Amino acid sequence: MNASDMSASKSLPTAPAAPQPAPLLEARGLTLTRGSRTLVSRLDWQAHGGQLWCLLGPNGVGKTTLLHALAGVLPAAGVTLDGRALAQWDVQQLALERGFMPQQIHDAFSASALDTVLLGRHPHLGRWDWESDADVAIAQQALDACGMAGFAQRDVVTLSGGERQRVGLAMLLAQQPRVLLLDEPASHQDLQHQVAIFTLLRALADGGRALVAAVHDINLAARFATHALLLDGSGGTEAGPVGEMLTPERLSRIFHHPVRRIDDQGRAWFIAE
Amino acid sequence: MTRSRTVATFGLLAAAACAAAVLSLLAGSAAVTPTEVWTALTGGDAGARGDIVLNLRLPRALAAFGTGALLALAGALMQVLLRNPLAEPYLMGISGGAAVGALSMLLIGASLLLVHAAAALGAALAVLLVLGLARHDFALGAGHDGSPRLLLTGVIIAAGCGAVVTLILSVAPDNKLRGMLFWLMGDFNGVDRWQPALGGAVLLLLLMLPDARALNALGRGTLAAQTLGVNVRWQRLRLYAAASIATALAVTTAGTVGFIGLIVPHAARLVVGNDQRLLLPVAVLAGGTLLLLADTLARTVAAPVQLPVGVVMAFIGVPSFLYLLLRRHERV
Image 1: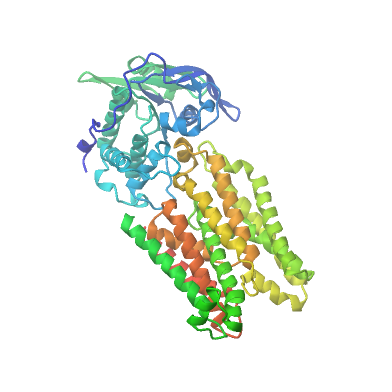
Image 2: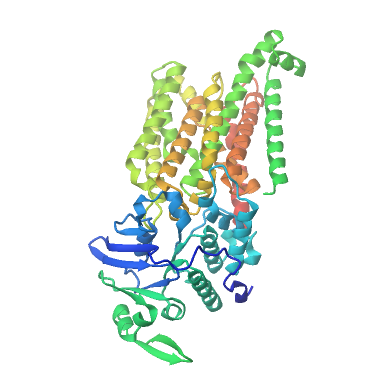
């Protein structure tokens, strides 16, 4: 397998419409606490179709917690999708609009990669429906797009961590939501797959979807994201276009470690001192 | 699973179930010919041997099939609920609660009806206790899976019931011990009420089948299932309720027959994969057939002595489970 299979998918179904004026996902006065710590304090933030947000911050600042709140799996007041509070959404209707890729999935049972990706079609199917040929085609295309074309019949419990992560991403693609939330989608990937996955994510954003991904690699964020949301771990947040947000000063402060910027061939690179 | 393989699997299982039923009606200390069985079943007069078939062997066979089906269904559901392929129906204290109820009634020498009723009550109390203590663990936890604590709560309740059972056994007079041991091993001797077991198995399967795809999603974890549109808390409560009712119906019919709820879903998974839409009906058919065969063996192999079916199941269950376990280990 090589990364060229993963070129961002024209074959994937296109998202509805161009960027809309109203935000798809919005946080208004969102506050998240864990124990006595305030992770996010009164966050006002909007994500529109066409945007790929990266969520940056050191370990334990609450990136995952924030993603859970935005996904609606952690009850939190102040998050709306399409102008409607997440708590007001029917669970299945919500699953048609937003998808979430957790950081790690532990597969308790054997299943083929294709069957696993087909689970992404769950919200699209009625109670008694079985997956149609069209659903299978969507799942197979999603596997192809994630560089897993030849893995359809492989048992997920025999896959490597990186391969399993790409099955998880394929499942999210098969779900076809307008808002995609991803918790470190490339953390287990080698170099070529990191680039391929973020190329794919950026193409989805360019196609009109809204994406929010927690990321550890500043350079992947700088290269592929359109916007960045930085968490400082004490409730403070900063959000804006990626070019404005990623400065050595700000990154040094957020990560509590000096960060230097190097310019090469028209692209900015950030390295730890 | 291809369509033709699915059809072949179900065809084979249905044929095996019918063969087991015929065998159970023919086999026994009173020799009955196939013609007499046929005459009795079709309402003709086959004399005393017709009575044996209709009033003794048939109800017992139906009860055994229903009980096996219930336990296999409960095992499959518990494995999804706890996301653990080694989970089984008795793990969470239902059988323990039922045993405390049944043995208490056996101790005071109550009627069989009271034994059944107390077993049902004990099972219900154990379920309510687990539900009350672990009610928060059915919900979706942010980032963690509630299953380990739910499992541990159930295991501790089961251990507590086990202590009470031991206490009852140690104070029981000798002449009552045999009945208690047979109840604990699982036994169909004298069972004539088959309707709750068989009816319950069919009804619960039909109730859970529409949920089967959501159960597949739950296999990926509560977080994944919730974001795929499954109402996790509600679905897991339904799962627990269905598994509990199935287990309670099974143990009130025949006592605590072991191994069926563990090995049948496991073996079914090896044949049809982990799609619950196929796994649940296959487990129900296979569980019923296996327990029916085991019971036929239990009452014929050492005739005129009748063994408790639980002993036969253990002799079948231990080696087959070890085989499945080691085979699985090799594969991974």
